[in-house]
Image (cartoon, rainbow, N blue to C red; front, side, top):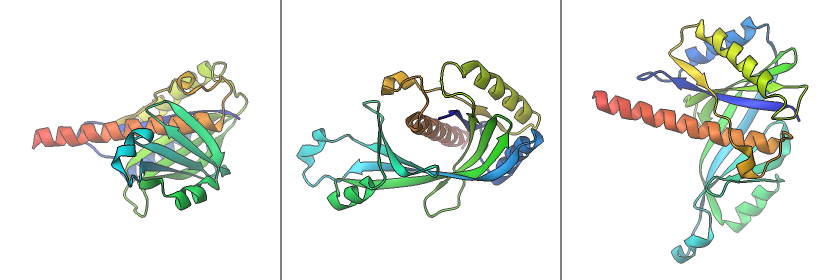
Length: 225
């Protein structure tokens, strides 16, 4: 499948993400002659073991992530971050998990937004919102280069496009910037040929960065007060 890169929005110190920034970012895509082609959605759930006997805790991962994607409706992806494991399963695994009650979901976040086409590229402008809530928790951009599925071969092309994208966004003088942290796919046993498992790993990495940014904002706010 085509290569993708996910960037998360890092607000400037003392500022928060809001719908106005999201609208401005969408305008940046349109200024590049991006044509809206549809919607995109993914969901990420934090799971914790549902321990009836605390002495068995050592046998279970402390937590893991479950990810579903709109473009892969029959698949579900698991990431155990501590052991650097990513797994692809049939979506029916959720029914089995519900019956077994071995793990319980703690928090679910939805990544939803608009899909734009720009020549050989596709851009997804994504807002991060909690389950059953409208509050905006984060903003991400997903850049997809359609002709190539090799992580290594597409590296320079993606880097050039990301630089162009950051330059366009900088002209808006928004309070923040996009940050891209490339995961080490080899740590997860993934090859150079891009797959949906690579995307799942990127979602987990981007989410970790969003959480870190939020914690830094809270800490800076507490220091000022």
